[in-house]
Image (cartoon, rainbow, N blue to C red):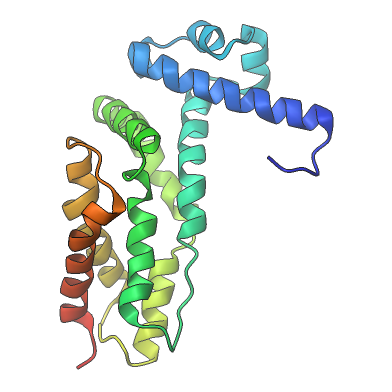
Length: 205
């Protein structure tokens, strides 16, 4: 929490975090459709009025849960191209950013919860997917720089970025939804293979 915040602002920020935590508990307990703002307030240890002072609706709470989950990953994904560093280690950091959600038990539990919610509610799923456009695509920017530096060879960096993400999602993230939690060390062979496969296709020869 930002130390520059005033005492009142810190209290508001802390209460907001408690409400978000209460919403996660409520969604797990009753499902998104079944969870009420009353239940959120109860599990957050707050009054219903306080919950509404921070969030106008249950949907706003859901977006806040997603935003909190994405914040750490977004910071990790801010990777800039290096002319001197091996491509493998740079791509490795992109993999680490993408698997950020599934190598921690609390984050993985939230991802599983959100997956369940979106599978059951297409309207929410569609709204969530529309929010992706506002994120900076560091991977595509990185691929363009590596291509310009003649270390990668590809016609369409956007397509290559999609392929890279698909490799990570298909081999690591999606299986994590229904498998026991794995550590970074346990995932390293898969991570290395994803990078090797990607570079075998797009590496400059």
